[in-house]
Structure formats: C-alpha cells, structure tokens
Image: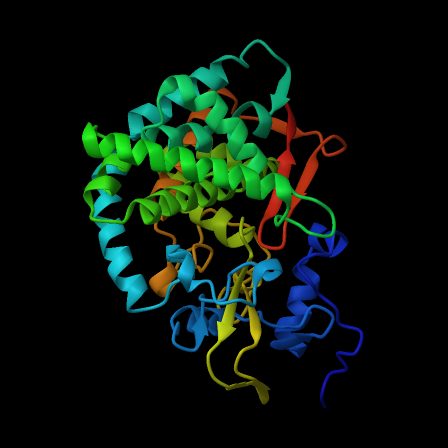
Length: 390
C-alpha cells in the first residue's frame, strides 16, 4: 500500500522544521525517497545510498549550476570557482590546489591551533560560564584559516569582521544579500592583493603555495575565499554541536575527558549525528529514474547529507549518539570529486578544540534558554551556546 505523502512537507528555508528536521527526514526516507517540492522547484534525496551515489556521479548530478538553493539555476562554471566545476576542469584545478593544500600545511598547524585554544580557554578559567561559540568555537576557525593562508597579524581582526559580514543572513533572501556580497568582493580583492605580494615575496603559507601552483590570480583568490567560507562556517557549527551534544551525553563526555584517543572517532560521530552542512545542491544533466520517479534533466536536486547520516539502512540505531560507533564513510564532508578539500583541517581543529576544552572544563551545562540557533539553506547549528561550567 502506497503511503500518503500529501501532508509531507520539507524545505531548507523553514526555520521551524530546521529546529528538529529528523522526524521529517525519516518520513521522507521511508515514504518519499525522491521528494518533490513544487513551491521552491526542487527534488530531494534523503537516503544514504542515494546521496552517496549522487555525490559519486557528477556527470549526472552536476555542481555547475550552483550548490545552494537560492543561487541555483544559471551556469556558474564561468566563475572559475572549484565548487562549481565538473571534470575535466575540476580535475585540473583540484590537482593544482591539492599541491598547495598538502598534509604538511595542516600538520604544522597543530601546535598553533593548541596555542589559539589555550589562549581563549584560559581566559575563561575564573568565570562560571561563557559563550562556547562566541568566546571560543566561532573564533577558532577564523584564526586558523587566517594563519594557514598567511594573513598578516595586523590585518586579522579586520579580516575576521569582514568574514562575519560574509555570513550575514537576511529574511527572505538568505545568504544572497548586499552585505554578504559586498564582504565577499572585499575579501576576494584583499586575498588577490596578498597573492600578488606572495608572487614577489614568497612566504611559508598557503597563499604562497597557491601563487606558486600555477593558478590564475583570480582562481587563487576564489579558492582562498572558498576555503575561508567553508572552513570557518562548518567548523564553527561542528564545535557548537559538540558543546550541545556532549552536554546531553555526560557519560560519553566523561569518557572523552579521560581518554583523548577516543576524540577522532567522536568527531566523526558528531559529523554523522548532526551534520554542520546538511544540504548540498546539484543540477541534473539528464533524466534520472529513481524509486519509480523520473527526475527530469535540468532539475534542482538537494542531497540531504544530514538525513543520510541518520538512515537506518546504513547505520544501526542511527538516532543514538555513540562515540564508539564503528564508522564507515559518512557523507557529511560530501563524497567523490567534491569531497571537502579542507576535511583534514576541520577534523584536526575539532579534535584539538575538544581535547583542550575537556582538559580545562570536563563538565558543563548548556543554557538552552539563551542559546541562539543559526540557519541557512545549507548550514544548520548554533550561533550562540552559553554554557555553565561545573
């Protein structure tokens, strides 16, 4: 008997649904694995294996027409941004970028990241509580990316404030607004000037590596801006979820405080359990038949990585948070050719941030009455997480 899905509704702009989308996503997985939203003209895939397969098939599910719903439609390959490219252009650019973004560049950051964490967390030692994100978690990724890129210390505060404006959200238009676009233009111009400087005067930083990788100046600046936006926003959301989820699971938090070797797997479980970026957009390059539904060519398709992480077809007891879970590949960093190029750095930041936090503050409670959610069509998490340390 076919399920009645007439009352089933999900869209990435609905802030009420976004508070807890998992029941809706569960019903989509069960009753409408190819979900159609006429209001915003998109299809959505919610099951793990469908989301993974779509990530693996850029020839069918293309990134060329945008990856965020509010900008999807026009062909964006002309922008030269790697996130909007498919093979062969993507392959060539990713190869050049990978030469710049090596494990060495991330590994040498470990001591620096620990130093950043120590400075911010030690400043909270004599307080009964603080805002885990505003005083720590949201600042850390911006500091790390600035350091990785090679932003001069005297520019870093201005750089951080411009980055904050880049993530400005306006009701009705989301992230596509004048404040955000102006900030993006300013950052691009600033980073392009730094790349010019590194061409003439090389330093030991990522901007120098990009300047030497053979990328056109604009492409190097575009990639640096993408790294900044993706790395800052998703890591901040990951850390916000960590504060909330670990407070709700104090026994597992105590295990992590007692044994830091459990942290890498705990980070993977956090990414699966509450994906910081649960929605990615794709554009169909041909008709696709899936679950007895035909998705026409030139359709918007949203891949729900947040739903995929809770799919019982892929994970046993998926709504249970378990730092000991045996992980196969989750899709919270994407998959295939567009797998997040900064994934190793995000994992490193998450592990060190939690280790340093638990070393100083092994127990805390979240003040949910003062916590502030953050919502975009592609990002889900918190903007403020006030905690009381015990």
